[in-house]
Amino acid sequence: MAVGNLSQIVDEQIDDLKKEWLAEVRKSDYLTTYKSVNDEETIKRGEAVYVHLSDWLKGTPGKQSAEEYFELVGANRFDERFPLTEVHFAVYLLKKIFWSKIDWRDKVTGSFTTSNATKIMNVFNDYFDLASFNVTKGYFNQMLKSIKDDKMISKEDLKTLLTKGKLDPEKLEDDEFIWRPV
Image (cartoon, rainbow, N blue to C red; front, side):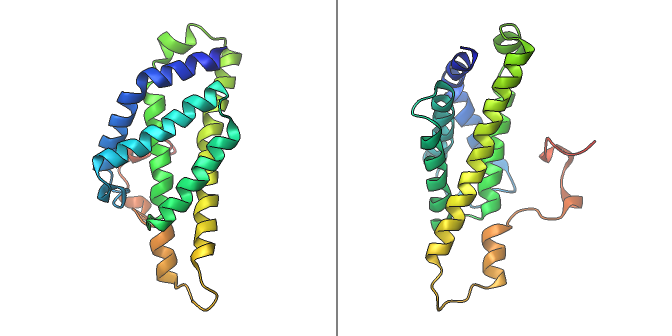
């Protein structure tokens, strides 16, 4: 099956993927909290996402396992006081790096029909979209658990947890987002 072949590509590229992700994390202005995590742990976190992607593509251990993993990631990042925007940007970088590493001309387009390629792209996009959804779900569930009934959460607390990074669109550099409108 074509998707199975792509899991092999992920497995073959995993060392390059995780190293490139570490380099992107270290140079990103959006990931200041991630920069406080040592290189070995950062690489381990990026590698786990790609391992789950490979498993997702193989159909083992399945969709539920990946969803549970990302929910746990969201809860853990909340406990570590990572702003949610940083966690989402980290997932975005993982996806961007993956797509940039795949040599579509030789590995994909030559062996798959357009219909299969579309199906495969949907599987990858579903994986990363559900990763973001479940990270958010885990993050908010953990936040709700941490709030005591007698404690007020301030606007500044929420701002710190939810919106850290460059917030002024005029200050963004052209190459910082691949989805910028033309």
